[in-house]
Each structure stands twice: as structure tokens, then as C-alpha cells.
Amino acid sequence: MAITRRRLGAVVLLLLLLQNQVLAQEGILHVSRDKTQESTKDYCVLYNPSWTSLPESLDNVTLYNLENFTSITLCKPTDVPALGFQGGAVMVTNGTCSVLEKARLAQRNGANMLLLVSKYGIITPTDNKTLFQDVKIPVAAIRFGDVMDMQKTLGDSVMVTLYSPAVKMFDYSMLVIFLIAVFTVALGGYWSGVGELDDMRPAANGAEGEARKKDDNVTFTPLTVVAFVAVCCAMILLLYFFYKWLVYVIIAVFCLASAMSLFNCLAALITKIPYGQCRVTCFKKTAEVRLIFLAAACIALAVVWAVFRNEDRWAWILQDILGIAFCLNFIKTLRMPNFKACVILLVLLLLYDVFFVFITPFITKNGESIMVEVAAGPSASGEKSDGNLVEVPAEPSTSREKLPVVIRVPRLDFSALTLCGMPFSLLGFGDIIVPGLLIAYCRRFEVRLTSSHIYYVSCTIAYAIGMVLTFVVLALTRKGQPALLYLVPFTLLTSSVIAWRRREMKTFWTGGSYEVMQHQENPESEENAGDANEYPKVP
Image (cartoon, rainbow, N blue to C red; front, side):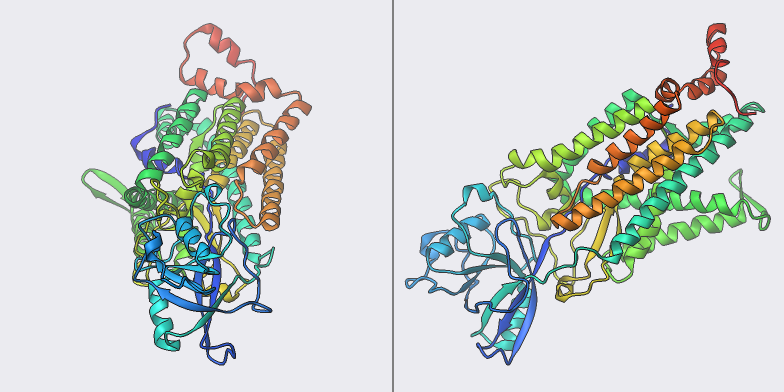
């Protein structure tokens, strides 16, 4: 079935849902006026944990005299003072050359720590470490505004050290995200089954139900799935090179798609209430008043989020509401015709995930994966040429733009790292929608064959187990995980085993029940009609 204009924006947004969310590693710059530490202050820094590790507390740390050389970029030997850096912490301006070139030059001239300062915002140091294996000193980035505050509060002669407080392996925000994810795929799959049953009933009564079904639903064939994954690859490459422009396009598309999805979700509930059904006519179009007010409210909610999207204290609530509605509507609307299409989609997207996370670091100049670069945004990632850092405004007056394709829940473990802003646990929409499409197919398959709920329930439980394993690995490794690496095997194997045990694998694989629907819609021959009768029908 061709994709209608109404669904085009949502389909475009799905291309971006598989980005692995990568949090920059936060640390603390502890500043003291002298070794007695009677007058101290802490500031947020970002560092690369793959280069060096920082102590978890201030116990037994070494304080270094801070040498302010922000007037230079430290890219050539002539930038080094005549007496070297004498074992202190060096603070230089970011830019011109790569981070590790600065660090190597600082280390060779006696520095024990390198701080990068940028007037355009705090950034995560990235570079190709394989070319600088000899660099051992810690490297961190700090806001220019914090440097000014440091000088104003503590003066020019200070001592500094770096540490990174330990983050608890488990936080209750993970439990909240787990519940949101399982609830969304379960409800989305069930709603898809209800829609399937509704579509079957009016199909025999007239063309009105058929027209509604064709307008509301999009079916992915195996060929469409392959083309879709190819477009995903093209889209992530475009984002890699043109992020600072395309991110605003994605934000606009998300607002439109999520507002429409929220309307569809709430309209399904409101239409069950036998009140407020009065209608108004405008431009030869008739609509219920309650639905008009609902549409206005959904649009207003999306607009409020767009305006205040960088307000961490409460904007995440709006983003999660819109995101849940988007995922629910997508799972219900985008239909997989058979298990074969589901396998192709999930396996190809799993390979897509693994390639752009684990393989592309061997291709890019700065040694970072393309997925990491896109997920973190240009202000937290390396320049795509010459290894220089990209700088975008990130001072308190402006915030770094991020792709709005995640469920965000603030961590309840408030530590010193809150200096860097409110920490969040994240889950990409793709980790909900992609397995959710398989769960939805299982439910619709059961509806078509008047079967029990065994496929739907088992696949939902498998999704929950895969999500638990994802969080366990995340907690143990302290690194962002491609959730599909765990969700895809669990859901595919579980649904396959159920179909095999029930001796329905052939029908489950080919989607025989959907052939019934297609033959009823487009009877081409008596032979086709005869084949369709082989499958049971819902009364």
C-alpha cells in the first residue's frame, strides 16, 4: 500500500529513531585558593573516559597550580613558555589543532593536566587516540563563563584537580523507562489488534470502512523494508555531515508528527464518550466540536515543547508524553504483512545499528563512530575533517540542540555531577517502535486466525526480558548500548519458537491471514479466492 501524505512526516522521522544516545562523561574541576582548601569551588568539566580515568573522590588527590594560557592555542612549540609548564595544570584556548596534539605538546613540556576553554560552550574532547598512545595526562573541557567566575571568586592564583564522582549502577529512572517501554509496546500491539478487528468488520459492509482503513494504515512489504533501511543509512550520513541544519528539520517534523499522534491516541478515547458530539461545518468539512478542541490542545502542547525544549526541569515531561503517543500511533499504523517482513526489518536494522556503532570508528578520521557523533551532536563530538573540535553555542543563554527522538527521565541519584545539568536516563524511540511492530504483527495474526493471546503475550514478555538485559549490560559497562542487540534476538526467537510449537510457522511466516484480506479486497481469479478459503475467518 502506498504511503499517504498524512503519514509521510512520521515515516521520515522513523529514519532517525535508531540513534544510540551517548552521554558525554561529566567530571568535576575542584578549585582551591591554596592547599589548605579553606576557599574552594567546583565546576563542571567534560572528559573522555576512554583516554584516562579520574579518581572518584578528593581523597589523596594531587592539587596542581593552574597556569592560565588562554591567550594561546598550544598548537606549535613556539606557544610553549621558555621555562615550560613546570608540572602544573595548563589552561589553553580550544581550536586550530586537534585536542591530542595540544595534550602531547603540554605533556612533553612538563604539564600534568590540560584544560580546554571555549567561548562557545563546553564540549567533549574527541580525537583519534590510536595516533597519540603516548599521551597520558588527563584532558578536560570547561566553559569560558566558569573560568571567568573562577577568576572573580578565587583570583588568578589557584590550585586545581579533577575527579568524577561514582554513579550508582542502578537508578530508579531506569525502572521508569522500563515501564514506559513495556507499556508502550504492549498497548501499541493491543491497539493494533483492535484496529485489525475493526477493519475486518466494515470491509464486508461497504466501501466506507475500506477507505478509512487504506487512509489510516501503511503496510511495509519486504521490498519496502529493504528500501527503508537504505534510506536510514543515507539519512544518518546526512546528519553526520549537516547536523547543525538538519536537527531543526527533525525538531519540526517531530512536532507535527507527535501532535498528530497524540490527537489520534486521545481521539480513540474521546469518541467512546457519548457527550459533546455536536458538529460544525466549515469549508464543506464537518467535524465534532470536541475533536476541534482536542486538536488545538495537541498542537498547543507540541508548540510549548518546541519553545521550551531545552528547559531540563520540566520539558522532558512534554517530550515523553509526545514521544509515547508517537510510538503508540506508529505501532498501530505501520503494519507488517508477515513474519518474513518482520525478520528482514529487525535483522537489517540490527546490522545497521552494529555497523554504525562498532564498525565506523575504523573509518572516521577521529576514531569515533558515526552513531556516536550523530547522537551526541556536533557540540559534543569531533570535527569531521582534520580532527578539530566543532564548537557551537552552549552557554547558559543557549543550549545544544539534540535530536528529540528519546524518552527522557531524570536520574534520581543526585550527585555532584548535577553541576553539569540535570542527568537523564534515555531510551531511543526506535528501541520501542521496531520490536513493537513485531509485537503488533503477532497480535494481528492472532486476530486473523481467532487464536489465543500466546504470540502477543510471549513476545511482550521477551521484549521485557531483553530490555532488562540491556539495562544490566548498561549498568555493568557504564557505556551506551545498542538495545536492538538484545531486543531483536529475544523477540524474534520467542515468536519463532511459539509458531513452531503450534505448527503454524508456514502461515506465520507468509502471513496467510493477510492473503485473505488482500484477496477479499482485490479478487483477481477464482484460484486466488479458493486459496483464501483455506484460512479460517473471523465471524
